[in-house]
Image 1 (tube, rainbow, N blue to C red):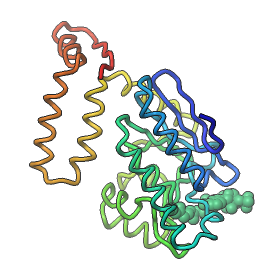
Image 2: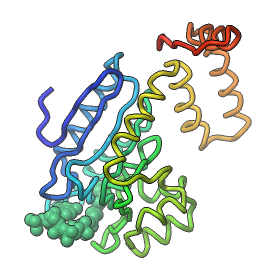
Image 3: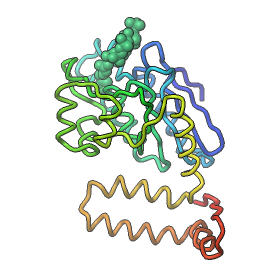
Length: 261
Ligand code: HXC
């Protein structure tokens, strides 16, 4: 697949998707969003890929938001459709049966924060900045910012960020639980790759079940979610990786997971 606005690279079990419009700080226009959808569909279809890293090109920005020039000429229906297009891609990411690590290497504003929220967790450089500045443009977040942000950091922080439009530094982003870990800029990608490799070496069935259950169980009643957890726990025992993991422990050796389906 030839992409014009993103870079798609696969190294072993790790795919790296880089949003690549550095002249506009990697702003998301409809073409970027369409190509992200194609890239994540390609990841889903490729059995060799077990983990994805999402980042932005250049050293200044992850994604500085949706493309304001493109949005400025949209009519209400086009704006609604653009919002839905971004929501569909972020939902595809959330439902992808493989973990996605956001490596946020600079500005993650508006749609940039929102797309990082659809990843499974966020690693950030010490130069990263987050925010939902849509209110300063007379609009609101349209790619899940009013929903995923509050589910992650709580309603009060989500309201402060969405209502003020303030851009926050990475220390505060970490304090409120938006970011998992912070690294010096040059150490961000090596750290993301190291964690991606660690996850890729686990069993495929158990990796997928963890992601699915934590996401899907979060918004349903606890007793229902616990039932699902028990069903998935049982399903892991259908995987050769369960036999390998438990045998390896009992034989006092390191498990060699084959990543069986
Ligand atoms: C289009 C953008 C852009 C954006 C930056 N650029 N952000 N173009 N859309 N979101 C362009 C600038 O116009 C400029 O182009 C170049 O990138 C460099 O940006 P500067 O502003 O010169 O850089 P700097 O002074 O360092 O400021 C960086 C910045 C600022 C703080 C990130 O660019 C900024 O505030 N950007 C907009 C952030 C924002 O409001 N994002 C939310 C968008 S709404 P030229 O041609 O002048 O060099 C949104 C909605 C999501 O995301 C939901 C949609 C459904």
